[in-house]
Image (cartoon, rainbow, N blue to C red):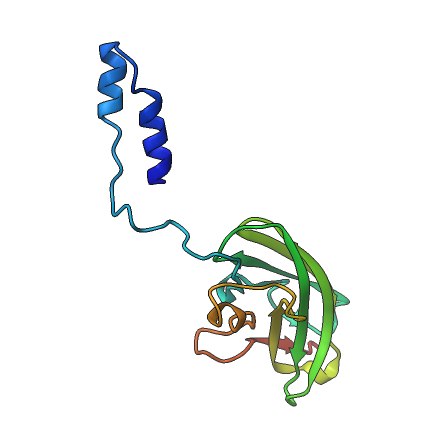
Length: 171
């Protein structure tokens, strides 16, 4: 950012008109020039638990399907890349079942994911947990290491893996 500002001022260096000289004198960089806006040398993908939405919000075994919407955020350097995404359901019994694995094209700093999934069966009635694992095959080299490689699992506000959700039986 500082180098960009210096180059812009240099473009006005030979100007003699008072208006242009006044404008060049007013270029200002507020803040500490040693701070980089994004210091991470590589991508760092996460899923924010606050961003996950089920539609309809109440899941019932009588429905044939539901929509799962969430965003993948990149806290590091933006680059076009693709990776595998794994979504699992933890049943009330503690058993995990795979809902889907898919290839996601991550672009920029935010990628929205919208999935239609089959509704769970009667074994899911009660409290379940949604588990999302980004870069499940560990293909992307994320930075800063090792922190960026260890935050690909969805974690709730209490630090527990996954997000709690409930499935009801309306019969």
